[in-house]
Image (cartoon, rainbow over all chains, first blue to last red; front, side):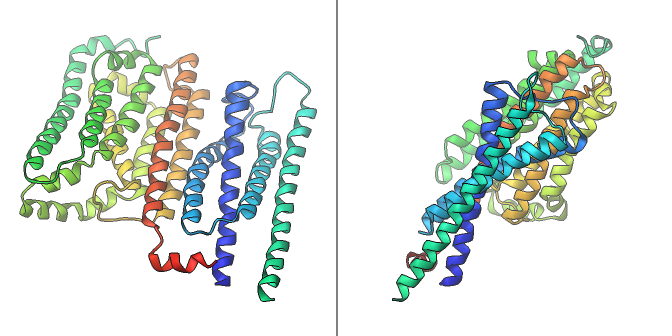
Length: 158
Length: 268
């Protein structure tokens, strides 16, 4: 049973990570591309690597969102849903993707910048610090989960 | 802006090409409806949503190869791209969802059905139902079309026009049925394998859209290429999301826990 518990603990985390990932990609597309028009569909400075990375993450984001939703339903159906681990996954996934987007895609691959015609530094700072905070929350949730998990184990053995 | 000035001198050829493309579609429509009629007399009623999907699917293919949209597509890249999404993505998806093979198999006499199942299990069908092969045929064909002179030649020669459109439609259909299993398919592949291949195929599709945006095919103006590329990108997204949804839904149904597993898991 412990083995199974571990499997589902991991699966809850991964389902969360995938969803967090898809969620941030969706916000990026909907808010910054479509509503604010801060980013462009294509930027002349984009490297070939950047184009490949952008295409891969674009496809992956909606794949991850749909796939993780069905996996979430599967966890519920198996009575194996674990809120805190799932939530930790969401924060980790969201933060990691935003950090990847902010540092590798925006800066190294020059896919596009967050906004044009402004001093970009504050935007980059806010973007990446926010990403770090999301990751931090994710890690905290993960650790606190493990504590309560150990506590629950101890309680169970009393 | 006209893509090419020779088009008008080929008007009669165009009509022939349109006829050749439309008649099999009309035939498919008639055969399907006839099969529904025949099999409904002997067997359980065929679900009504399927002939509806079949009809819309055939229609979206027909408007691409004939009529005002097809005429406009000769001179306007944006119209061409709308047609491409309809013929190569929407029509194949709707037709696949209409389960034509299942319908044919249940309509034909048993002995003929058996023979047909044998054909479906043959090696050539195995090749055509492999997701890697169908992805290469589908997305690879598009890369070839939009990044080489094939695109210009397509508008000059009716035969090439015919073959390209036939290819887009058929490649789209085999692509769809190699990922989502509506009809019986002899050579099934695992969900994870199909997911990875589909992910890569969709990636290649979105990269190509952005590539077209920055590198218009020969004879296409930058403005038309930009709009066309966006239609390919976002229009493609809509169909792809449906495809991914159905694929995941099929995983969800197939991985339903057995009662024994459920009993164990309650005590987690």
